Image (cartoon, rainbow over all chains, first blue to last red; front, side):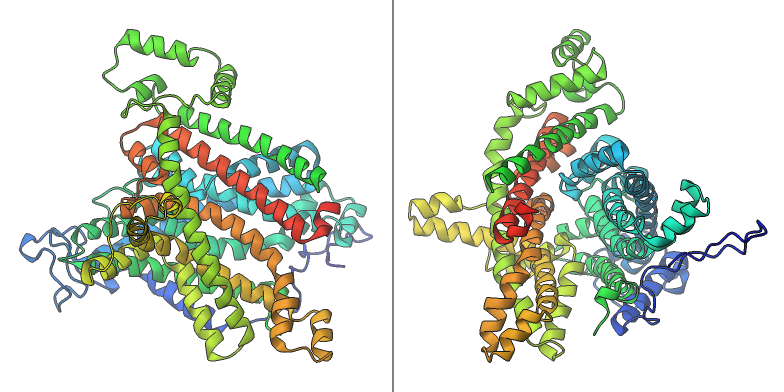
Length: 297
Length: 323
C-alpha cells in the first residue's frame, strides 16, 4: 500500500506523511549527460541572474564605429549592426528567455495539472468537457496557435507568456488525467477514503504527490520547447520587442547580415541551442531517474 | 474495420467544430472593434455598420459563432483585407506549396530517421550508438530557424550551390510532365527548406525507433527467434521492426503536424510561397480573416492526418479495431 496516512484510535492524526512517490527504489543520481545538461543550465541561469559575472559591457551601449565587428578581445563575440556588444546582448537575453519559459511552463503546469486532476478524478461530464477542449487545442500545430494568439493579443512579453501557456497546458492535462485514472484505482486511495478523507484531501495529499514525476519530466523538457517557441515568435517579429535583447530577435536581425557578419546569427542561435540542449539532457536524465521504465537494464 | 473507420471519422467532427470556435474566438480576443480590425482604420462609419451587420457582429456571440461555422461549412472564409481576394482562394493557391514542403520533409525524416535508429539499436552501447544519439540530441535541440540560417550560410552564401529563396517549378507537375529541367529546378529549391524542416523530425524519429526496437528486442518472441537460430538480420527486420512500427507510425502522424507548424518558420526563412508565409504576412498586415482561415484549414488537415494515422494503426494492430 502506498498511502501511509492513518488516523489513530485516539482521533489524533500522526504527522502527515505523504504517499510514497511514483517509482520506488529509484536511481539516486543523474546520468553523466544529464549532469552536462545541468551544468550548461547553471551557466545560463547565472548569466540570467548575474550578467556582470560574464561581461561588464552594457547590452544597449551603441558604438557605431565598431558596427558588425567580428569577435575580438574587446568584443569576444563581436558586435551587431549598431556596434552593441553581442556577448552582453546574449548574456542579458538569457533572462528574457528563461523568464518567459519559466512563467509560461509554470502557468501551463498549474492549468494542466488542475484540469487533469479534476477530469481524471471526477470523471463524468467534467472529464468529457476538459478532454474535448484538449482535443481541440491539440488539433492546432502548437507554434501556429501561439502565433495566432500573439497576433491578436499584440506582440510583447505578456502576450507571449499568455499564448505559450494556452498552447502548452494541454499536454499536462492529458498526462495527468491518464495518470490519475490509473492512480485512483489503487489501494491507497481506497484506504484514504475508508478512513474518511474527503475528495479534496485524497486528491491533494495522496494522488498529487504520486503523479508529480511525469509532470516534472514533462516540465523540464517543456522548458526547452518554451525557449524555442519564444525565440521563434521573436524571430518572426511577434515576440519580445526591441530594444530588449531577445535571442530570437537578435538572430532574426543577424540574418540580414549573413554575408558581412555571420557571427551575429551564429552565436545567437548557439545560445538558444545550448539552452534547449541543456533542458533536453536534464529532462532525459530526470526521466531516467524518476521513471523506472527508462532506467538502464 | 469499416465501423471503426466511421467511428473515428465521426470523432473528427466535434474537433473541427471546436477548432472553428477557437478560430472564431481569435476575433473576439482582438482589442477594440473587430469590424475596424477587419476593414482597417480608413473604413467609414456606414461601411463599418454594414460590415458588422453582414458578419452578424451586431448579434449575440453564440449566434455569431453559429453564423461563422455556417459560412465556413459553405466554403466562405471571408475576404482578405489587404489582398482583396477571397480567403479560400488564397489558401488554395498556397496550400500545394506547403504540402509539397511538409510531405518532402516527412519523407526525408522517415528515410533517414528510421535507418539511423535501426543502426543505433543494432550497435547498442557502441560508439556508433553514442554518435547517432548525440546527433539526434542535437537535432531535437536545434531551432528550425537557426538550422535554416546555417544551411543558407553554408550552401547559398559560402558555397553558392543552392538557391536560398523561393520555389522552383511545382514538383508534382514537373514529374507528371516529365520535364527534367523543371524537376531539377524544383529539387534545387526544395532541398534546403525540406532538409531544414526534416531535421527535427529525423532526430526524433531516430531516437524513437531506437527506443521502440530496444523494447521489442527484449520480448520473448525475439528470444525464441534467436534460439531457433535465425539470422540477426531476419530477427531485426522481420520480427522486431514490424512490432516496433506501432509507436513509429503514431509519431510520424504527429510529426506531420510539427511539419505544418514548422513550415510557418521555414517558409518565412526561405521565402517559400506557402500557407505558413501567408499567415506570417497576414499577421504583419493585421489581415485577420486570412489568419483565421489559414489556422483553421491547417487544424483541419492536422485532424484528418491524425485520423488516417489512427486508421493505419488499426490496420497494423488488429487489437485496436476490435478493442
